[in-house]
Image (tube, rainbow, N blue to C red):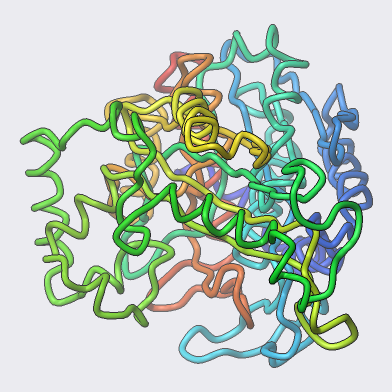
Length: 481
């Protein structure tokens, strides 16, 4: 890193402007579930890519919200794909200590100066940090060490229903890529955390209606008292859902659902045992992403090792939400709804493919006399297994060593998304949510990104330097730098 002084000086001189760029992106709401600001944010992202010097920048129309394609041609021998999600979950304003789209700079113990805002950690803050680093490299060295293909979406929090559609538009271009990378802020206490694999995702809606069923209210709601004579689409949906699972949702009862399930190998079990040992003194509820510490007894009956194995290598079937008829003030209380729906997500471990699972659910509904219950698949992404010896991960390890950090690469995470397309369809390594620096409360009230160096993490400038050095190390490992 002896040659990094010009870049570091540039980043220090532009620190306030770079923070302002992060704030500007946070201040633009991007809430696809509320039809709020997605197109505007896509235009902003296109502007950032143009400012970077990308020779190609265009909005990508889809059947949903537009994405953004951009290409920076550095004249390099290798090309990196950069996945980006620029949308966020809707904030619960009542639980924030500051307006969630203000992007306020403040002090938060024990971190010192932080940026509070919706997307500060997931994912607007880290992504703009990445773009700041690329800008710094170009300004101080004239270009980047690799070419970069950017493909950004604003629908990740809806399951990325159109990302595959966007990928298809540039399929011939992605065929030349060497790897896919997505930035993050995953450092704490001298360790950068990442994951080598991602579960598959099926995001779908089941809908029962009197019109499709031929029973119950059709085209309007009935009165609740009429249920003594009129069948209920709501109960029809509930019975359909109940037929899908047993044991309070712990086991899926759809025939064929577990046909693709493979038990953990001894090597995978040993990897999990080592992971449990590294987290000795912490319960799995504190370690595994998305779980949270407030978990009832039914989940905590598992041993530590069993919990990790189930998290990595077992499928799940979760109901996101249910809706029918009256759900609050301002509507008819005593209604017999003419339709009802449920949103659900299924997470699938390595070895699964989404298509057979979807077909098994359709077949089950037909076989149980519920062919009228509509299954609408909103998004489906296969799981992805990663090779721990790739040049990209090697570059991450080397770069972390230069910053006196170690890398903790867990074998899997229970989440997944459209970035798996690049591994499954193009055969390239994929790393998602990788970067130093620290943020917290992702998607939750008072989400934050740390701005200054602390005893427990690096701040904005070091994070930008790390991305720049990562690209240099990666290009060198590939023989291009």
